[in-house]
Amino acid sequence: MSETVSKDRTIRVLLIDDQLIVAAAVRRMLEAESDIEFFYCQDPTQAISTAKEISPTVILQDLVMPELDGLLLVKFFRANSDTREIPLIVLSSKEEPLIKAKAFGLGASDYLVKLPDRVELIARIRHHSMGYIHLLQRDEAFRKLRESQQALAEDVAQAEKYITSLLPKRITCESLVTDWRFIPSAFLGGDSFGYHWIDEDNFACYLLDVCGHGVKSALLSVSAMNVLRAQSLTGCNFRDAGEVISALNNAFLMEQHNNMYFTIWYGVYNRITRVLNFAGAGHPPSLLISGPPEGPISCLQLESNGPVNGMLDDFLYPSESVTIEPGSRLYLYSDGVCELHMPDGGMWPFDDYLEAMSQPLAVGENALERIQSLGRRIQGGNPFVDDFSILEILLH
Image 1 (cartoon, rainbow, N blue to C red):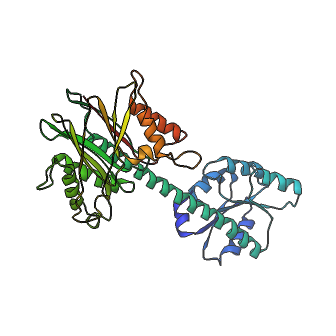
Image 2: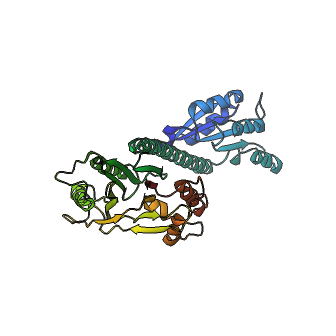
Image 3: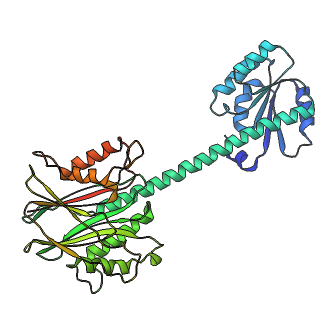
């Protein structure tokens, strides 16, 4: 299909007829029409190649020609990928219903007994040509959309790869063991998380979720994560969770970052005192699971008592503390883990999520794999509509 045709809407008529007198007559009928270009092919064996060369918007074709039967030529036009969609008007001296039926059955778009009235011929040429031009324009728009979507998908894939490369390596040491799962949504959300030793006794962990989806959300998420990794908030005590989030709030005010904000939960665990200092900004509560693997199990919600980060200038976020029992498991997660869309249109109740997280683990069972599999079942096997991010820290 011609890209030029789709842009300038020029009507291009190709007549295939062995009689020069017919060609001359059709040419005269069309010569006063400034938007119609006329092309002629006398040899039916060259019809396909001629049509490929000039890209007509409509073909006028005789049925009775030497060397090649007209009905067979109609069949050839419809079998060829380059000419299959081009409107084809049969011009025939025969007014027989059976022949008309055969022509339409083979793919003819219209049938006229030659020579038709000039007004009628031009009207049919315009009608079929404009329909074909609109088809070309639609296909061109779809092609550009596919190219744009492909380019976007490639950008998202690169961003996803970059974010994944920044996620922390899993840790196994005397004090703790870390594990995590990160499944980006199709449009890439704004989740990121991390952990590191501030010093030999204090271990920081955090998970944040930027509003919206796409590359811009991911970039802001990475920026905030890099600030926490580098501990580059001036004058901030990174052992005080409330102070960290307060400083982070002022560093990422919405009006300075395209009206975007994020939620976050940040905690600092001291391996000597076994105290976890934590604070949050509009984020789902982290869960502290304690008790023997076989049960009974205690599930404590470590609430996020503060507005989303970036909304209120100079807001002081409160920090809280909890003492950790040996063998406890701490879970940080985004709303993509607990706010799941069920096939019936409803949302998975948060209490059901808490119950699932509180279930004892079977021997050799991985809690993250269990909640990930459960999440897929809750959604009926559909992809996650938001980033699925969950971090587990086993505190010995």
